[in-house]
Image (cartoon, rainbow, N blue to C red):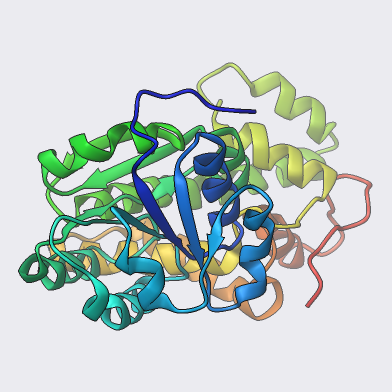
Length: 308
């Protein structure tokens, strides 16, 4: 599907990181008519974009040198900082770097400070909505940075979802952490609700339908509740990503001088899932809960899990 937006197709985009999220996001930008260069450490991951008209570069310096806008969608803040440092000699004044990865707030602020002397504007713009949201162009995009830079790329970001400027550099990541705090807690609560329904003799699927539309309704109950009932634990967002985000929430809480006791419990729960289910979908929180409650199992389907 070709996406029509109010933008200049002369804008040259370089997209760094072609993974679970990066691939559908870059694909939408290509379908919208943007000129896009793709770079990934594993160069084979850029090849699906070549069929859509992307230029695939092996060298990072070549990939970023001719870009107007650089978008990074990488594993974590340490990787973004490493890639940014490697790319710095090829950057030039007037470019805009949009980091859409999930990082710590202080890392985003460090990225902005590093680029400022080069004349490169920086926006931290993490997203929520998962792979389905990336494919549909319905991501929630939380943006931190200068209003002038945001205005220049708003139409571009609207191809990917709903961008909102929430404050200065680093505030996008702070907003994402608020989002992940709610997501992480709700995932575990939905798993507990379904397990309780099952253990008490109710039809867990019918209970989910019964409470939808009331005050318990949420995107987590809709999407992840269904995955739990169908036992589809293929990612989606991964347990290891949620655990990382929860740890970053606690780091932000410490920096802000606040104590978040429920977040601490949820963080420990996700950390305990890592040895067995790190690459599974976040809905695999149900599996960890069932492991603590032997003999109670939600649904009748076999588990669908990623290959180790």
